[in-house]
Image 1: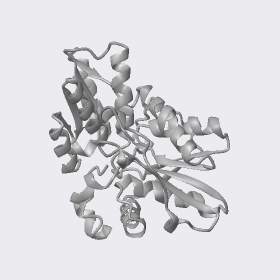
Image 2: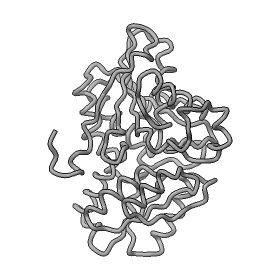
Image 3: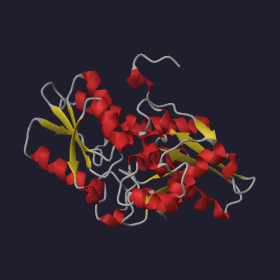
Length: 311
């Protein structure tokens, strides 16, 4: 498909079946491969939408610097788009993120401000809010409360799933900002009210980057819990193990949160005889190579990954 520019290449990602993980003949699992977006993650969708909304409403004007708290992927997406448009960008992120994220942000010309690693993405939010409050030159798009976030998924990701698999019965995605679950979930339920929307979330105190434990105390303003049919908690060991299994059994090279999403999907299907389950895999595995997760088991990885944010 021909695109006018890199921003126009965002979306229309593949939906591929995962037959090796089907628990029984009538239960089919499908992966929405968001790692195929230009910067390698689903966050390209919301970054494009938030930047365009800010341009349209006049809040993003020459002289402004965009500031955003991020655990990595949203910052990378914003850095790419804003550099093309000529706007400076500052990413506030936990010091505990993987080196690949730092390298990509630097490659796209972003300035990085670190927040305490042990505070995760919640700490990055606090630091960014203080910076924005003290300097009128900053514009914080704030993915956690920006209506353009779920709207991007309502207008693009959801319709793509309906187009490619109108028989969808369940949708499973990681609980991060809540934008993917809210936007896709609302669109799918309008199409078929019987579709179930399931959030994969980390066990409390486990840092699976991009996945949010609501027990940590911060609930993103765009998150409407009434739209969720279930919230399934997944541990880090299971997330890493399932991510490795995806590559070994299906050749799918995905990020750590994708392992958590697949694990949650398999729990959903335990008692089902018929289902078409769409799993949204938020990014590819490229930003996780430093973990060595595809060549070592979790027992070996544990000391090097504990306390760090991995998506």
